[in-house]
Image (cartoon, rainbow, N blue to C red; front, top):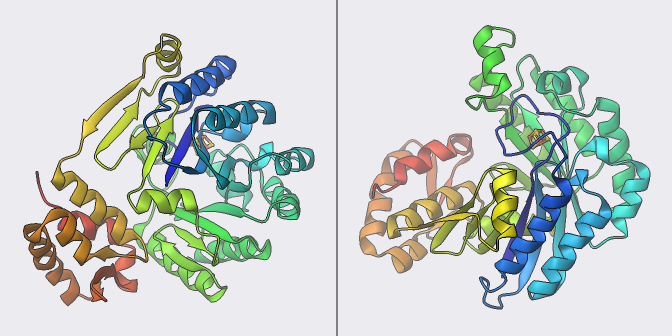
Length: 375
Ligand code: SF4
């Protein structure tokens, strides 16, 4: 099984916290769409006939593309790859692009999953983050989307400066009221060189409070689990049958092709990065060149990758798999390094799988890095 990720590098405006690759000018949109289909064609042999089970439009803001443009890209996937009978096809979409008519139009296309960037239902949070939508649009688009799509995920951000725990709880309750089967939620992180970092430095916005983010993460987990969601990955909660197939494939180390500027690819042994520049990307594909840099992963890189992704999921890290794939030295190293965290009740071993405890969950990435091997 394999997945195709397609990066749409355009946004209406820059959210203050975002460090993804996007342009707020749509001037090159047509050329870019053609370039995406060209890259799909150029890379058609990379999957060796492996069946594509998931197609994911991420970004950027993929909902800025028209339905015809999205269909044009999907057609290029079908033309060049073997696609399973019922693939999961996800569109990341922002509420301000999801009018009633647009949702109905999308529901008639091959897209069968929407991932909606709500982030908050509160006006002051949305303004602080410079989101393009308002609180009312967040609600009305969900009301409409749930009438036409069964498989919907929404994104929420916690740890927003100035947002109290009560406000956060109301956000979660509002999200639950729409009865969506999947919720992704991330802590607001201050990435260098973003507007948010600069506002915090100048004292215009107060800094994020890790302690509060930690508390809000636990409120989220408790509320969603009590409402029948499975916390299957650190930032992801899904009802049975609605875990993101696309993301689960990443976390389980399956192959994926990343199409578009800045997209990443992975084939189990190598990782690729496409150029992070729309013009360079368009020019390269026009000359039948792949705008990609490839790194071959060492055994240590692959082990580190597995530890990082495995620990974040409910499936955990299989000790047997570590021994089989990387050898006894890696397995012994893992057991030895884990001991201190097991003693602190941050990790535990269950049925030969290493997992994070409830207490360890929020610290998961830091713990994983302590289990890494150095090349
Ligand atoms: S819409 Fe998404 S990709 Fe675009 S700036 Fe905002 S967070 Fe970043």
